[in-house]
Length: 210
Image (cartoon, rainbow, N blue to C red; front, side, top):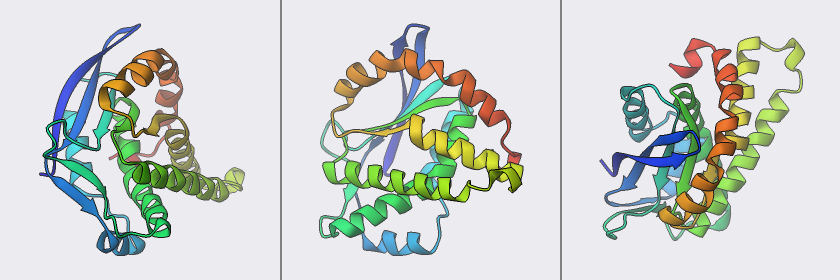
């Protein structure tokens, strides 16, 4: 496995919160081969299924998930191939967000209230942020006729937009810095949203969170 999964704890106004942390244990580079595959389909990956299984195996609780872009000992990292063009990086960011969104949705249904990516390279952060905005625009365009649309699909699109807008974030800063300046400082704000997206998730069809 290219990622090590561990559990730690962070303090909040409501007490300790569980954080599931993914740390790369080898050097992984994503390039044109992965981009070509994602242009055809978004099947999700083994790591997505593994982290979801890990979260579901824990005691029920409100928790966050942290994806680290590099290992503190320097033996592992995650990023794009350096020979990708800027356009390819942006496209790859879009496809990766699209591929991972169903997993994000299932993680939220399993009790996750924040999904944070830290210690990523500037290129990866930029590509994922651009990809997120592109996917949001796509979802919003598909939801114009929500009144006449299938209500299960409306519920999925509503949850997916909320996750992309409010629960999923990307930083090139270090783990400890983000933990202090973002997570701990804003945990109460994150947690204020929990009742809203719990109600939102309750409307999702079973197939969307299975």
